[in-house]
Length: 534
Image 1 (cartoon, rainbow, N blue to C red):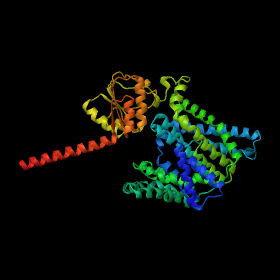
Image 2 (image 1 turned 90 degrees about the vertical axis):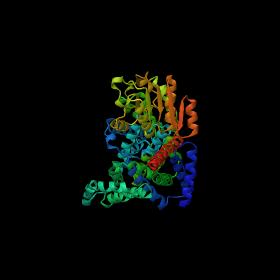
Image 3 (image 1 turned 45 degrees about the vertical axis):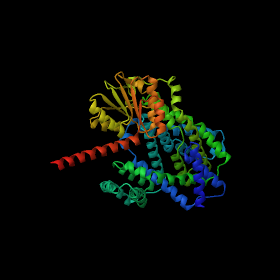
Image 4 (image 1 turned 135 degrees about the vertical axis):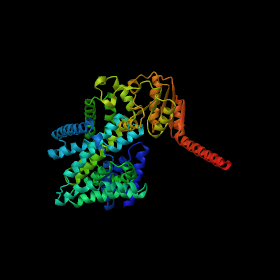
């Protein structure tokens, strides 16, 4: 039976992927279809589903940057939105109950608030996928959206812990000694290498040191996984560990979404409730925009962040699934929630694809805050007297900066989207400022741009370089533009947009490596020849 369930899940997920939809929609559909065919969940699928949730929370902990969460627009914005959305959705559901809809008539106020709380979450999976496809993970609105999602994940963990029903005993005091083990855990991470032992160490931390230990002392197991992840987040290899666990976590979460579909049979009533949930989804988007705008972000930042979060969440499904197992949520509502999540992805996908066109339409009708009051991440950009500008200060951009700065001292400026990277570059002595070159308003916010003679597009994602080049082209820039790309078709596209020089980073890296080796060998042979002659 397990083999049949896995096969159906693969086919359904693959079809959704080919339709440019998140595969998890296919997994939900597969679960519903299997349930209709008489199949039920198995102990193996259930166990893997639980492991997926545990690894998800551990991975979230590994990525938690507490400093970034302390920004008011993150912790306060996420908190205000969660409270407002839960309150507004609660009122909407009470209206449905007052109208006599049978699905809500038997629900108590506490149950309705819980459903509204589950609907208040946005999808981390969808948001990251949308940001990666546009190459805007590090854009101002991208970091804002991800910060809000992390806060929502924390809210969900608090809920899971509060509803666990477990009362910790005196032995739970041993957990206060965990920070003392942090240096030991860090040293182990330094020595586990980069292969399968790294993956196994991550699983050990999540399931044994985290979930297992917390469960043994009467605490919520999943909370232990999150806290162990947070403890390891300060290590330089935490991101590498998260990446090594990514595919394993995603595989196990497939079983979680299958379980949702296998739990209940979709009905006409379930689809009707899901449609009602979709009708109130725009309220959630409007609240996002209002919250972001209240922190004085520009229209573009507020709008793009809102579109990225304009959906229902798989984490809301996790909350709903736990509530269903504990008897807090009817099965029909859980099914409706799963359908609504899928429908929200169907709606949000084209909205994010055409977000730039939507912004062009909206920018003519909404005004940005006064320049003096705009959030510091959205301020005007002063290029000074620089004649060479490098967009994207990753490894390639940093190397180009060092080479050009040596030849043209005081004339090179780097533009980087991430605040923390800007700080590191400044500490290294580079002239780098914060800015998002994919922003359609980027060049309109630039001052003193008349000195620019050369622009280097060195961002890691080709789509980001393409978007930046389109903005430069519309600006009417008369200087030279050079860009990097990974594939030949990307090079051709950049050149068609007017790039003067485009380089394949893989070919250029190989050629540079060969030149370096050749120079070293020639120098070595010359030294040997001189020694021989002497």
